[in-house]
Image 1 (cartoon, rainbow, N blue to C red):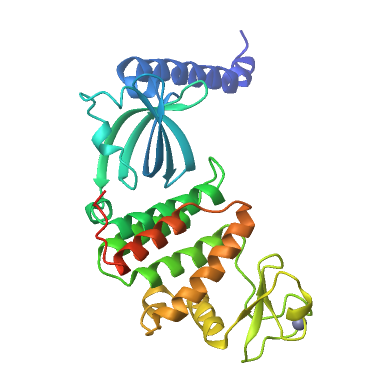
Image 2: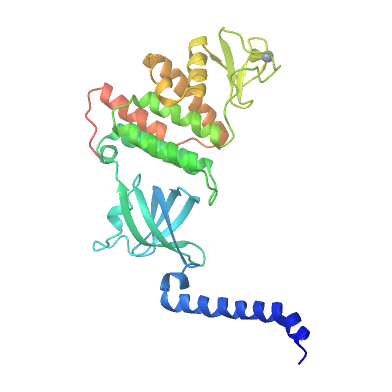
Length: 298
Ligand SMILES: [Zn+2]
């Protein structure tokens, strides 16, 4: 064989040898490392449990919000059996590390280890109601498998704030406004949604259908618009623009919170086209407390 032909062939020989080497080494890795073999079937994530339902005889269907995959619906096999080791780690509001196996329709929880259980939430009816509202909102405004790490952090910060003595009204208002912002429904608070004029410092109107403030000229001609005081508008603007510590450093009277809460709740209900369950629950508990009835612990 003439030498120049051999040299011409060299690149093919080398690339063929390299391909063979890659093939053999990948096979060896698969053989020695079972994790490689199952990489496609098993994955890890961190999530907060939003809600759970019974499934079949002993299983549970869980809706969680995960750090890197957004909302997921998962099956916890055998979680209702008293002997289940997973069950205690999968209570609502628990922040948990999960090992998941891909299923045909729903993925399956194979391991669960709680990172934070927020014990102060389960022991107090009002906090429980507020946390329920927080997870209900997140559940209703998100679709499955759409990652949003800002929303995940907002949720765990809110659960933390509910048990660490932060003002609960401020905590919840901040949560609602940030969540609405993240899911694309931040109310317009700076320009009239009717005529586009800049909103001036005076009492105005708010329209859920139009998604924001209406000036005193446009407000009365929009059927669904409701009055909003200048103070309420200032509170909303302050919360939309400020980080949590700044937003909550201002003293706000409970009456103002009440008005703003109602307004945001109506806006959220309008967007979801269905009345939310949790705010009614919170109001019932508060009324019982005002009437001197001590609500049972949950
Ligand atoms: Zn206007």
